[in-house]
Length: 506
Ligand code: GAP
Image 1 (tube, protein in one colour):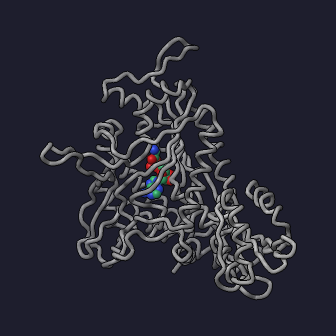
Image 2: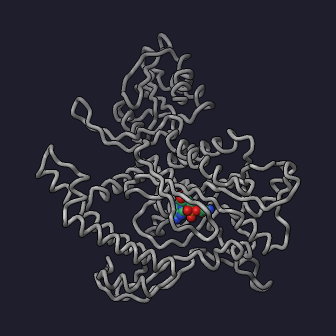
Image 3: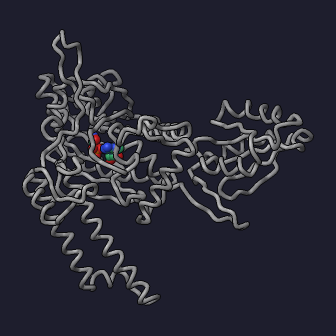
């Protein structure tokens, strides 16, 4: 098992044990790439969503919200291009009967070559000790150069075939690389076929003549088709944005990526409508603003990078991914796309309704351009959760697992713990709980030793534990223990709200 696989396994196990994420339908052996959020997971996810909503809608006077439906008129997906072009190249192994994404098989093959480069680097670092220059070694070592050329060649063949929708070319690449099925170990592959990612279902009863409709694969189209409704009803002037949080569905063929790639997931999207010609200015504005937001969640700057798209989709004139260093490596967390007037223009054409903005300053009408920011809520949860997960060795030799989540996002803000379950301590602790629980999500617990209860709260990332002891009954003071430093202070009950409030702002 590689270091990364080991880290991911630990994170998945922790998420389950402490009530963050469960495999969907687990008692029926689970449903692949579908997950449920447990008691603390749902709190963390809601806190992230709430933070995003505030940063978009509350903090920008010119951005308003929307909650559009999952089912929409089927022509919407024709107009948006999803019916014809929202495809992944797939192939089956005839022996194991397992289906794979062809491009992912090739990408996994490239990752294995990257691992070989890493091994060479580590070996050399050991050999040369202090004097080792990593960059120079990578530039000059012949074996590493061969591996790197190999990767470049594979990339070129893969991406050219993908761009040209050359399924035979992708199959030939898989054959040439001698890629085997991870389950059967054989190279007995079917041809590569395009596979549409949308889930279809029927609306209406068969007797009425049922129609095929799709579960939305992105929330954005609900925003585009409501553009006129929102602009008129909320009297919005360009530039303005529409923000939405909601479920999206894609029939992904994947394995072992936890909540990174799911079949049912949540998106937080914002479409920003601008005057044609000003889109690059806004694209750059949102690139910067979105990166700042990620850092504001307490995630380290060095775990982020932009990946600007060189080859652009037909509707975009600029696009970038904000990538995060997940336990599965650097991967897309958010996409920022300058989508021109493609979507509004397409809906205008397919619906026959005029979708335009009358610009009072120019005294003319136009179809606005759109810059979108599109982020997965589940991927943000994964980023926050995996980044927070820490195994610590303590000065006394013991160990703890702690989630160093930014306090404002923590599922529980304070745990109220009577030292023992007798002598009137639970009653006093309940009084405190009743005061605090209307302000913050709090947690009351009296079972087990205080040390074990602290550990449990560390494991779910609770910033403060408030312990009620016998002295509390005498002088109305409690101990308050801070999660990260584990420092304990004696404070008056009256001070608790102020202390917690201050922490939530940090
Ligand atoms: N409207 C643009 C759009 O949907 P996308 O890059 O396909 O763009 C946007 O998706 C974001 O949605 C991604 O950056 C990712 O965070 C999230 N996302 C996409 N597919 C996902 C999946 N299968 N599981 C979880 N999140 C996903």
